[in-house]
Image 1 (cartoon, helix red, strand yellow):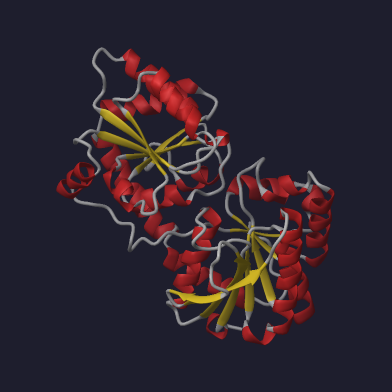
Image 2 (spheres, rainbow, N blue to C red):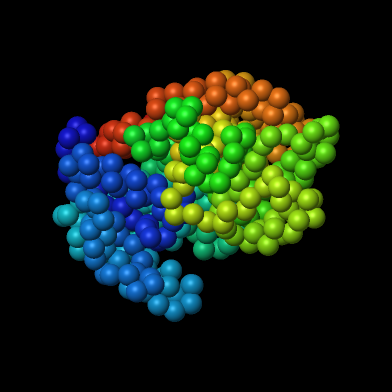
Amino acid sequence: MSASGVKSVLMLSQTFYPAIGGSEKQALEISKALAGRGVKVTVLTRRTGGLPAEETLEGVAVKRLAVFGPRAVDSALFLVKSFFWLLWNSGKYDAVHVHLASSPAVAAVLAGWLTGKKTIVKLGGGRGVDEITLSRKSALGRLKLAFFRAARPELLVMNGEVFDWLKTSKEFSGLKLRLFRNGVDTGRYTPLLYNEKINAKTALGLDNSAVFLFVGRLSPEKRVKEFLEAWAEVFSDEAAPPKARLLIVGGGPEEGPLKKAVEVLNLSGSVTLAGPKGDLLPYYRAADVFILPSISEGLSNSMLEAMACGVAVMASRVGGAKDAVVPGVSGCLFDPLNKAELKECLKRHLADHSLAVKMGEQARKTAVEKYSMARVADELMEIYSENGDQLDNM
């Protein structure tokens, strides 16, 4: 069957817009991109927070199944309801795309086996916090992995680190893997001209300083607190304080400790905790360098959005950043546990502001050529159309 043979796709996700996390954002953006190609896209998700049972969002039909009770009951209900919905409505879709390998993936894979529908499952998380590793820690999780090995759905792996581990592991030799990637709307996320960037900084109350930006959940594995400590040390090493600002956008359990760290390290003049924001575009456009100091990472949507906006990247040498960033060309990579490496990257940008401009241009080029949502959607259409047992992506 050719790509044009796929007329309808069912997206299955435990949570969906207006819940916004990395997986939810990709599910929405992929759905919109496919709908823009004339594909009928239906999202099946949980109904929470008084949201309507059915609605259409930017050409995408969203169906929400009612659930209730504690987390375990809620998850079990959604698994069962999803399974029967997929069976009863199998004539309405050509392929199923499951976002994350949580319990609903079991329902989709089983329904796909019974109905003969192509089913793909996107894995989330970086090495060590990936879904396979987490599933191994519980009896139900191990049972799920055994089922996957037997049913052999196609698993989309978002970074080379996890893919290489699974590919070479005898324990997971039964899994059917494909190295894939997230996509970014390179038409929405675009670079600015020099004067426009100055205006973008002014709009956020900044002068024309070098702006370093973190966007993401404020959790321990992101190591933002450790970055703050390195930032403070670099500032104390300089005879005169560098003309630079650090913006931290996001919320999470580390928000309180980070506020305290800013106070203790006397960084209130150079660091701003902006909290979570619905519209991130103004922040990307004001930024010169995007930072991602995580100990483990899948493939960060925020990093791709920043790259599409022509922002240089300064990231840990882990997960998707290793695949997306060319050191010395589109960004700087460092060992997340090596403060000296991190500080060296930081000092290079503080010493030469033109470096971020040059690297940002290359980051934009990479985003367009490799990670554009248009390209990702085209390749997904081909994947949905494939029949038979495809070889693992090497």
